[in-house]
Picture 1 (cartoon, one colour):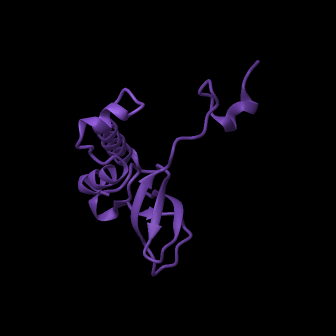
Picture 2 (cartoon, rainbow, N blue to C red):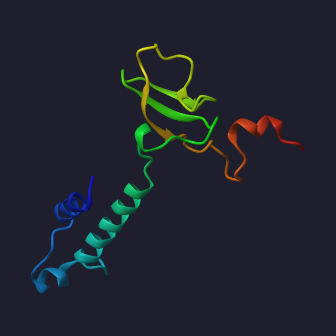
Length: 124
């Protein structure tokens, strides 16, 4: 999705209102144009923060860091850069290889920021 597609979506959701009479009839304190601008800003923020697949040809993650890998055959697995500098998980066939990768999402945590899987290890 690009900026043009975002603006088209905003135009469909919040069309410009051309007549002052229609603005006077609105039940909100905001104009349609303000809603539209908020929609565009929100969509741009989401797009900026969505994890994206990174081609292996553009770079690899840090050594031994677990990431999601996407292979030529369409498999998605947790993988890492091995000592040979290759994305590997020891599971792919010899004729398959990873073409893209992306960081793993953060570990789930509770309202205090404690990782969920660590709750049983908390000291009282």
